[in-house]
Structures are given as C-alpha cells and as structure tokens.
Amino acid sequence: MENQQLTQLIRRELPGILQRDREMREWVLALTRERYADKGETESRFDRVLDELRRDREENTRKWEENQQELRVMREEQNRKWEENQQELRVMREEQNRKWE
Image (cartoon, rainbow, N blue to C red; front, side, top):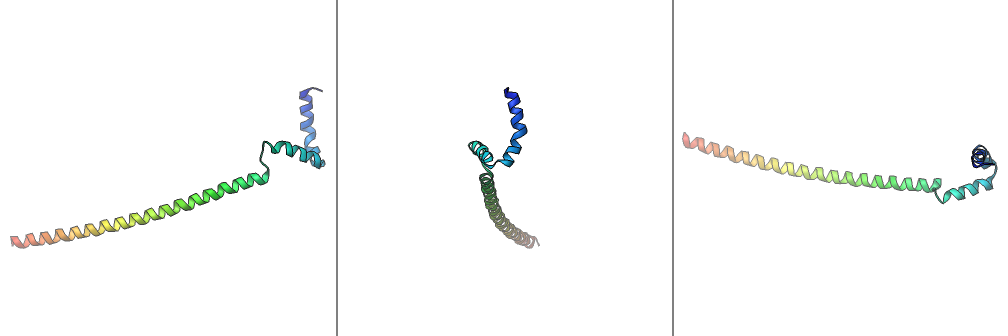
C-alpha cells in the first residue's frame, strides 16, 4: 500500500476507531500532547490571560480616575486664581475711576 492510499485510509477510518477504541484514543492523545495543549491547559491559559486583562483594565481605570481628580483640582485652582485676578482688576479699575472723578 502506498503512502497516499494509507493516508486516505487513516483519514477515513481513524474517526470511527477513536470513537470505538478508548486505548487507541488515549494513544493518539498522548502523541499529540507533546505538541498541543489539552483542553484544560488551554482553558487555564485563557483564564489567566482574561484575569490579566481584567487587572490591567482595573488598574487603568484607577489611574484614569486619579488623573481626572488631579485635573479637577487643577481646574478649580486655576478658576480660583482667575477670580482673584479678576477681583484685583476690578478694584484697580474702581480706584482709577475714583482718581479721575
């Protein structure tokens, strides 16, 4: 039997053999385990990645909120300084107006 024929036979028969023969199924899984992660390992890796993404998102949210608070404080301080400056200008204008009266 040639390689191509053997390959076709394996492709045709292997699914049924794996369903019927537990020992053969375990043997094939052992062969592939060296190269591919099993379902549990894959899910575990996936869960770890999701946990890492969640932690990163939480950290970024916390940093964003801190930054927004700092910006609010700066804006309030700038507004306060602006109002003080405006008040000083009003007082100066009033003084100038009184001098010219």
